[in-house]
Length: 139
Image (cartoon, rainbow, N blue to C red; front, side, top):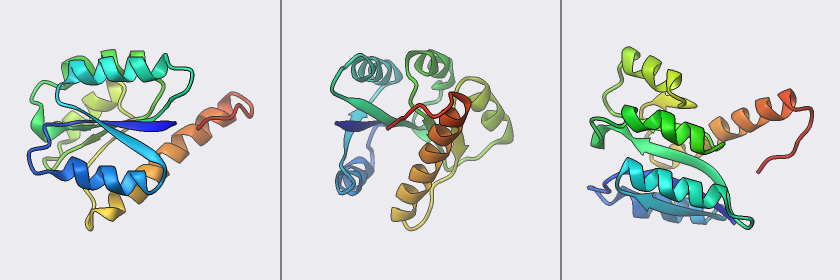
């Protein structure tokens, strides 16, 4: 089974909406409300024989110090890590990618466009990795 993890505080109820959109595509949403919880859940899925981690997203606006644990998260998983924010900063973008993020950027409108953007980011990352490894199949 494929999963994604959203590390956020779900202040506006957005997680439930996106969880429904992803479920329509056969991907189960899991919410973590702290970076530590996100790392634990990612590690659990990575170690599972039956589950795959499609991606992890971090709502940067809700975590002032997410960068401190981003490197740990990136070392614990092979899944793409997407940082989303409404307060884009070139310096934070640089730091996020240096610490293991696959993507750093803003939200799309309408919300459904976020799904398409994430699918493209994930497919591009898996496609590049597959090319480097010579045809190995990924989720």
